[in-house]
Image (cartoon, rainbow, N blue to C red; front, side, top):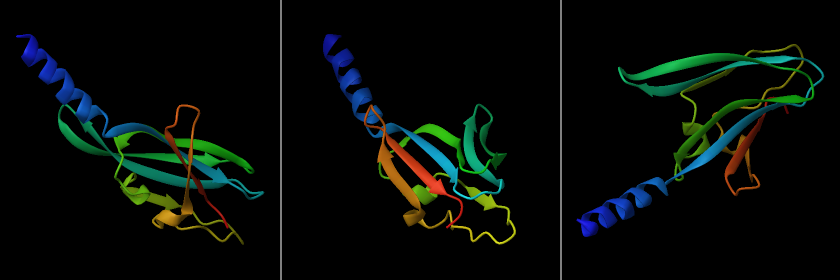
Length: 120
């Protein structure tokens, strides 16, 4: 019995290690409030559903858009099923579908933190 319990713990530990806490911030580096909406696929007891949340980012501020445990090998463009930025007058916006626009850093625990600047 101990062998089976040990094997289950090792197998479960191996599966958990492929996921790590990942945080996504969206930064507004302009002097105007900017709006966007982000959609994620959420898994519930009735199956997967797309959840869309609107955000307003105040000037020179940032918002937490998502914090979740994700597989380590996913590209940053796969974390949101939809990411729409609403245009603002005379503001050139960055493309959230371009993985290079998501800047990766790490927090104090070594977990990835991605920051997306809305404007150039």
